[in-house]
Length: 295
Image 1 (cartoon, rainbow, N blue to C red):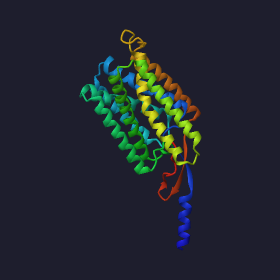
Image 2 (cartoon, one colour):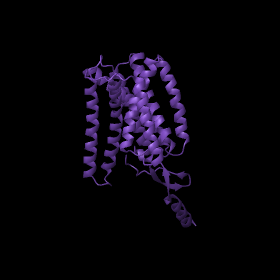
Image 3 (cartoon, rainbow, N blue to C red):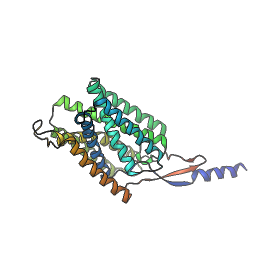
Image 4 (cartoon, helix red, strand yellow):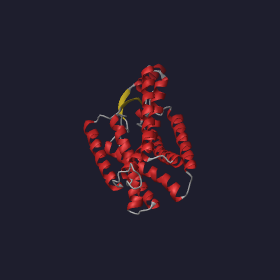
């Protein structure tokens, strides 16, 4: 009787079913939309705060409320829906930027302090995520707890990227084009190192997964100051910076938003960035797969 029960239990826990991740596959289109969304986060927050005169406090309350609404929608769907996901990313980009700007301009918190605080908060989030789930992989975001860790991490990466980018500009006094080139070069270096290590390690090697996870999150953080630098280059008047194009925050925000909509429509139609994951079926439903370690 015990043997039969054990065999029955084993049969149930060893059965696997296909599930859909709540986040997209990391492709070239992913990074293009991410940088565009980051730039829109910079230009849109400046447009609302400065051009329309909302002020930092009112702008952060408004965008924070919209973000909460979209997070509720995102958590309620049972799979990755491109327009919901990317609208949430755009809003969290704006809010993350506004949090740092509000601390700096509204409460006069030094950028050295805010950068350090956000770095610590991000590290704590990563530690709690890994302690709870034994993975930081974005290929395994199919439970509410993992999704909560994911979006909290995203928020801190935007806040940290904003603070670190502003701090570097403050300390170095470099031009907008120099800063944009620096962040682009840093992301390119991470990419080269990632693929070099990937080519030298076996697929099953544990360092392969660690390399992919680390490369993803480092690049994700650095796309924030890169996008901000691009936004500043496009919107800054030529009389303030020789490299500035003076296109205006509203024009850049609209153009980039239209491009994002076009790319999201393409992804919605083709479903090229949908991730399928395998999870064991147990008495309590699908459970996380501890071995899913790739980024």
